[in-house]
Length: 80
Image (tube, rainbow, N blue to C red; front, top):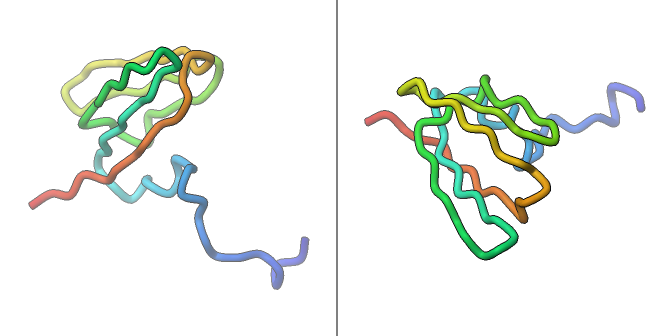
């Protein structure tokens, strides 16, 4: 694909979309209907694989088994 045909838009499901934020909140929807909300996730620490790993601003590390996840909602956290 040539440079002229590339768009400057970032996909909304991509972690890179939120790299300008200091932290994000994620609502993770699991297959069994359970939803969990995690706040203070540092986007630059998210490493995807079968087990997605991420760290929070208070020092916690989260490890999520992707095979049990239906979808993830991501919201930027604004400092006020």
